[in-house]
Image (cartoon, rainbow, N blue to C red; front, side, top):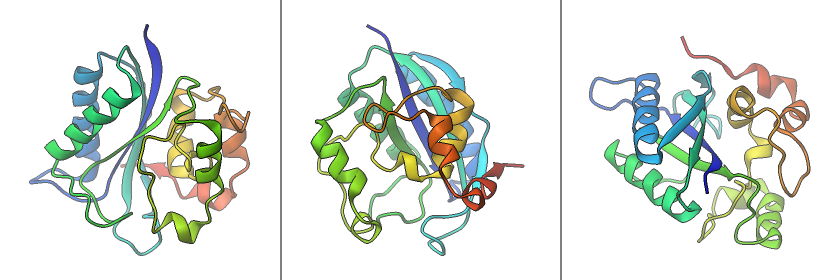
Length: 187
């Protein structure tokens, strides 16, 4: 059964002669091929690096795909595509040629609501040191990140977070205006 999947893309490093925007465009093509049906893609945005000072600005986008793959299969495909683009996971929140985050698979909550809520509630200082040891859906930081919510609003403005019971529009409206204003179309 086909399900709507939301994937966030980010890049802030070059690969051969490709800049971050070109890397995102190429990755969208690969995702479309590997996951069957690309339904919609946001525009590509330029966003400040997070945390501040960790590197150059990012190119960010979100795509919506309809696929029959399980969440675990999707995550494996995302990691394979990242590796194809030279992604090395050596520094948490460091520079990267390509970052693909599985944001949501329909309204699925994995592994369960208690675990997802614990990651949502984790203080920022702990987030910078710790990473889940398993797939957590929806992505536990999506409601905090303008660089995810702004492009997500392009492709799924009415998607409702299954634990927070807020739509993308509502979550975006709760972020500081300065965070939203910092996410601009990539020239």
